[in-house]
Amino acid sequence: MKKEDVTKIIETLQKEYPESKGSLESKNSFELLVAVCLSAQCTDERVNIVTKELFKKYDTPEDFANADIKEIEKIIKPCGFYHNKAKNLKLAGQKIVKDFNGQVPEDIELLQTIPGVGRKTANVIMCDAFDNPKGIAVDTHCKRLSNKIGFSSEQEPEKVEQDLLKIIPKKYWKYVNHLFIDHGRKICRAQKPRCEDCVINSYCKFYYNSKK
Ligand code: SF4
Image (cartoon, rainbow, N blue to C red):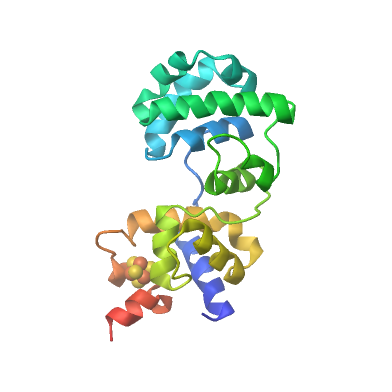
């Protein structure tokens, strides 16, 4: 795909979704880390309801490091996979206290040494908490749109990300994930993409092939 087409796609989506941003509520990098960990297999709306309660009781890495795991489980149960998530949040708190002086590190590699934090979560934290993108968070929407538009034919999120980083200029990295989520929810749906209503259909490989 030509560089100017890539830019056109991103800028068209920015015009279409001018308010596009993450919907997880947080006041700082640690709260965002907790919220993103809870959001695995759960909606952002539900996470926001849960974290409202959770952060009243536990709000710092120290709080989680010292917390009774059963108490965390009780609060986060509506988010699903709560045994594993509670365990990881406690371990994450302990790791941040012990190795990072109680501060979430602004470093994509160090972030991934924290229990429960993978590449996608680390990218979200670098973009949305530190405004210092080092990559593009690839979730299910981002992967699907990347495949359909023709940005990547890979299936593994980390390989899709590497393809995106090669073709998308760095100044757009922090917006791509949120734009693709908005477009994926509204138009480019997994079951039935609304291609005729899509503002980027003239650039899309899937659409082009469907018209042949
Ligand atoms: S044209 Fe269709 S497949 Fe391509 S991005 Fe738009 S909705 Fe998705």
